[in-house]
Image (cartoon, rainbow, N blue to C red; front, side, top):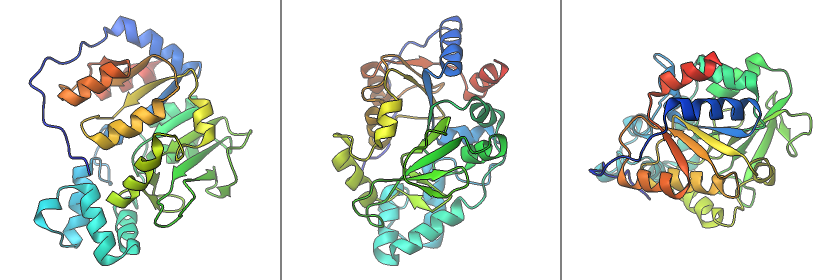
Length: 290
C-alpha cells in the first residue's frame, strides 16, 4: 500500500491572500455551499487529546501490543493487515476500539461546525470528536454514514446511523446535516477501514463511486470543499479526497501551512484547490469569530 511522499525541494504552490479566501469561505460555509472536509490534524486544536492524531501515532499504539515485522511496523495499513492475518480481525477491531475509546472534548471549531450544521461534513479520521459535538449541541436533526469493511460486511459498503446511534435505512429528510465518515469510526458500531485489504476492496470500486453513498454524491453537487487538518502526502488520502470531490463544485480550499510535497502540490493544482498558508489554529479562530 502507499507510503508517505518524500518532502519536495520545489517551490510551494502559491497561497491565497487572507482578504480573498476568508470572505468566500465564510459566506460559503454559512450558505451551505462549502463542505468541511476534516482530517486527523483537527485534533491538534485539542490540548492533550487522548486519542492518536496521526497514522504514525496510531500504528505505534497497534504495534506496541503486537509484534510485527520491523519493515512494516511504521506503516499503518500493512501493520493492521498483519494483525488481522495473524491475530484475527476481531483483535484488530479491539485494538482500534481501545485506541479511540475516549472522545476528546470538542474544540471551538468542532463546536462551530456542529452549530452551523452544513448539509454535508466529511470526517476522515476514526475519533468521535465531531459527532460528540453534534450530540451535545443539536437534537435529532443530524445523522452519520460510515464506510464498512468488506471483511465484516461483504457486499454492503456503508451504514447510516441517526443521532442516537441507531441503524437507519438511509439519510432521513429530517436531518439537517449528514456527517460522512468514509473510513469509519469508533461509535456507534466499531466500523474501521484500516488494513490493506480494507482499502484494496474500496479502491477497486471507488473510481466508479460504488462505495460512496448516493446521498453524499447528491449533496456534493455544485459545492466546494474546505480541507481542515488534512495532508495529501500519501496516495490513500489523495485517492479518497479526489473521488469524494468528483462532480462537486469547481473551487476548493485547503489549510496547509506546511511546505507541500511534490505530489501534494500536484494534487492541489489538478483539483483546483486553493492553498491557505496559515496554521490551522489561526484559521479556526478566524472562522469561529465569524
